Image (tube, rainbow, N blue to C red; front, side, top):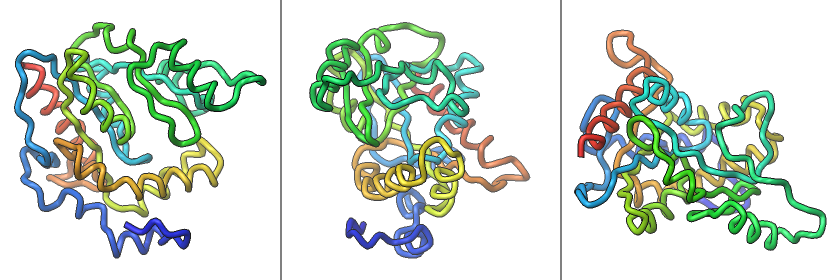
Length: 248
């Protein structure tokens, strides 16, 4: 994937590096669910879904119905970025405190890690994201789901087993780069410049998806099977994975 300053447009990306190439040739385990890295269940650990996907792919819209039905509960992560009052729920993240005037950015992140007891942390998208120990240990109804970006997935694959959990990594995938670009720019959560940076950071991380994801869910914006929406199929696909691993 090109990392040159001269960035390809979303339309060029769709021709040169289609998103569907990431998953379309993988075995289909369930409608819209593609198996990538095989997973052998460790019965000594508690399985937890680690859900990720490119910005604008629809992670929340796929996860929310599963949480609402009590089939799963979301393990709440923390972030230092500002909350968008218009678009984001107060309980979506633990919104960490703002940076003090006398703190360098490095000291600010170091203090947040200590203050919020972050057992996993990752600075990206101009902010610090992480998992507080208290969130991981808090019990809920159904299967635990941790919603993170792909760098968080890498960290959890490396570290969660030492905390007594086995990650089942799942990525929600769109139809195209153009679709992602329009979604992330159109939602108005941040300034356009930051949104574009977020988009191209996702583009640069494609190989991390290939190397760290157990299952891809194709969250198509189109009707796929007898008029059933792509989103309905995606929710059903996540429900299938939750059911499969919750029984262990």
